[in-house]
Image 1 (tube, one colour):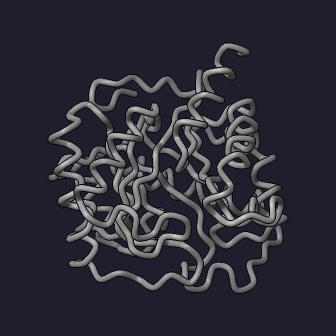
Image 2 (image 1 turned 30 degrees about the horizontal axis):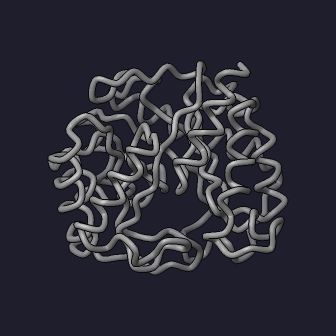
Length: 274
């Protein structure tokens, strides 16, 4: 698959999606990059560190986060997307949103990919945006909403339920005209999962790869690492690198991380070992 002239050869290496949160309340970096000039500096840093894609989001979806009004999310993300696109015309940009209007305006401002944590469930208008533009799409599994997902998540068959959900969502997007190689599936680490659920999903890469779509994991600084390391979010980067190495060796196509520099070095070594 090509995005902005870049080739993404799924199945041959692990690519990095660098996180750029322009929010005041994200769990590990909220408030750092709210102003466009700060966001642009961080974008430059992520690109220099080796990000293959920038993922720009204007609403926190951490556990118990409150929804952001559409106008406020637009106010946060559109100027940043426009500024990044002007400064870095060749970097693929993903917009992290479940709102159709935000996705539409972000694509018009220069974004390339829609990263929808609801997999098109929260806004019924999103399907029309995708049908009209046919961009690459990330579809994530979430049990409930950010306000409810961590209250008491239960599954009868964790892997099977998530696999069936992702397959159904992917087929819906494919029917809208998006090629299969442009439909990226995310099992949703930390989104309606317990500590044990997250560990099981990390060990289930080959199971989800059987669906035949590119696979993304987002382990960066998540709470399960806090349980293991007994550290605060911004102190979990080394643990994140360990998980990224594990996922790369398992064949994950894309990892979504905060500390791109450390993950890039680790993946460079993995590429040589492969």
